[in-house]
Image 1 (cartoon, rainbow, N blue to C red):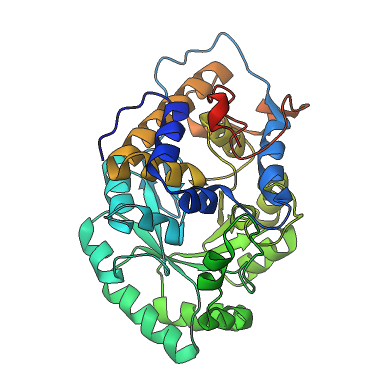
Image 2 (image 1 turned 60 degrees about the horizontal axis):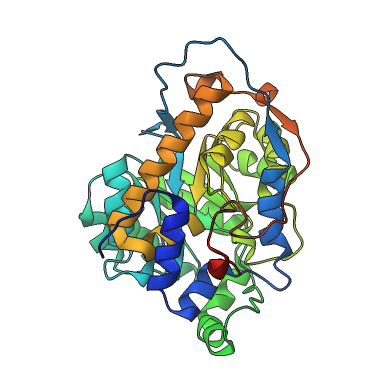
Length: 356
């Protein structure tokens, strides 16, 4: 795809033009009343910065490490499963963009191409995200393939015991996703985590779908390397808190014993910096990633990530810090949102005919 956009607003317009109505709804929709989706945005908009002045911010450094692995900026490409199939290259497009931009990508069990093909696409660090679709023998076989393909890390998604009731989708699309194999996800427990840990040794392990301090503490107790806060973009359980509202309690619960990743509504550099100030090590982008892929495949995602990098640098400089280590909760305060939250409310300059 040819890519020619300078702002995320332009990117959104291109994505909607390129995608089918069903693809657009699949990206933007969520479960039932979509309250969880909107709370993700509202929670971010309910935080404001407390900027400091007269500081030398000529050289902003975005580099960081996630479970010891270097990142050029504190962003990871969240596993977005079937959404990656919108482009011909699918997960390879995401992988190529991540490699080009120096960030980490999460490859979903339910995307294409194969485990081995994505692994061979580039040599950079990437994480394979597991949806359980079979018994223990199925899990062992899958984990052996992941390890043989030399993925840097493994993530287990734990918020999908049932498929969220996504009413914006056409009924025929919902039917294709409620396959019998999903029922295996209902039996995922800490025993499943232990089974995988026994096979992977020192390979970093992420638990994705954590929403409470209690479960974050259990992750530490079970020696998980990274706690990944996520409500699946609001696509699973409706009426949960916005993800960033849970960040402080999760950071306190892990007490430095595991790195914290968060996703859910993060579409701006300001969003990312808020999470970093509250203790996240990295922020996952999901819908933003999907919009970029819809606008222009790998090239579109690279352009999107570069734009996000610029936004993060600008925000940090205006806040008054020159590296991520200087950020802390003193730079954040509660505030009153100024607009009604929805998946596009961070982009108020969208043409009227492009709004929901």
